[in-house]
Structure formats: C-alpha cells, structure tokens
Length: 277
Image 1 (tube, rainbow, N blue to C red):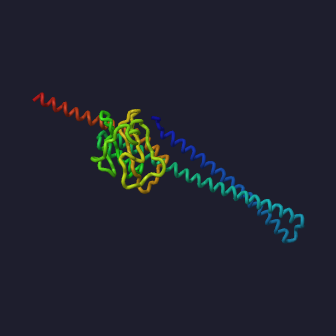
Image 2: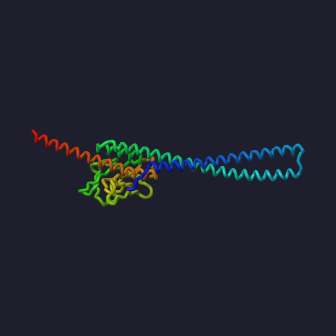
Image 3: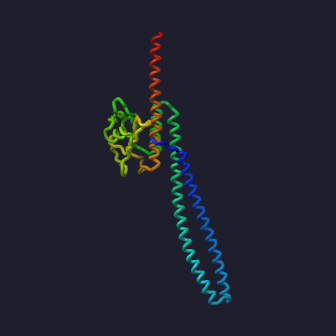
C-alpha cells in the first residue's frame, strides 16, 4: 500500500497557491501601471484640445490628436480584454483556493479522527469511532462495517446503518462484489450516478473498501447510500477512503488482539485461582 505524506501534499498545494497568488498580484500591478499611463496620455490630449478650443492649434495638430486618440482607444480596448482575463484568472484562483481549503480541512479532520481511533483499545469504541468517521467525513447514510472470519472465509457485519445487523447475511469470500473486493484487496466504486433507492441489496453496495494491514484483508467498509446533500464522491473522498482503510484496519486489529489477550488472561487467572484453593 502506497504511503501518503500529508505534510508533503499540503506543502505542495501551499506552494502552488502562493505561486498563483504572486502571479495575479504581478499582473494586477501591471494593469494598474498601464491604466495610469493611459490616464496621463488622456490628460495630455485634453490639454491639447483646450488649446485648440482657444485657437492655439492648426489642422496638423488636430490630425495628430486624432491619431493619438485612435491609438488610445485601441490600447484601452486591449487593456479591457486583459482585465477580463485577470478577472477570469481571479475566479479560477478563488475556486482553487476553496478546493485547497476544503481538502486541508478534511485532512485535518481525518487525522483528528485517526488519533481518536488509536487512543483506545476497546473494540466497541473503535467500531463506534469508525462509524462516526464514515458518517461525518464520507457523508454516508446506509453503510456497514464487516470483519473477515478467516476460518469460515466469510465476512460478517459488526455494525450496520440502514440494516438489521442480526439479519444481515454473511458474505462468502470471493462471491459477489463485496466478496471479490475482499478477496483481491481492491476497492470497488460504482460507475456512473450513485443510486438513491430505498431498498438496498446487501450484495450490491455502491462502495466496498477492504480494510488491510499490508496485504492481509481483515474486513471491509461497505456503503449503499450517501446523505441527501452529497450527490457524488470527490477526489478528497478517495483519499479519505485510502487513509481510513489503513487506520481503521490497524485500530480494529489492535483492539481485537487486546480483547482476546484480556479474555485469555482472565481465563488463566480464574484457572489459577481454582488450583490454589
């Protein structure tokens, strides 16, 4: 699994942002200087016109002024075109800035959530945190968290929103969309528009993201429906899925090992107490 360096990514985006900002600033300064020059020339023409009105100029002066006036009109037209270009660049700049701000905000939220994931070894708390992350950061409405039983080679639901966890079917490894995704370790994303049907087939999610520790799959996140205000996935969402898969898998695996070791420890302690009575 390719490592993701958020600091490097944010530095690159910040550098891109500063470059765009400097470019717009330099161009704006150039336009202002050009505008100042044109105003100076217009003032000079007005002075010449005043002289003509006072009878201080001849036909030659009028012809020269007409040529200069025509030249200024053409320069003004070119300047207006350049102003429109700057305005368009400013709009692109603002849109890009908003995108970067949203990405940075989502990444910050994810790392806060990942900190929460690794702050506890209680299995049920870890599951609850993962479900909250999927709701708040991904924007899912109907979704679930599955764990793999390696002996049975089947995925079972440990938490589900929109289904009854007790009646949710076990999914055999390698069978259907979910089973194949878990078997090959590759995420599945439905092509085209995301369905909003009320009745959802457990075997046909719109998203299935395997939870992996290196190449070992321990479970999967499945999504059937997004919240009403979210119509599709963005590039940030795919990054969130990738990071969530790694952090959630590690947290679940650690919590499960800790729970099993605690259970075995209590069993051994109980057995020792019986022997010493």
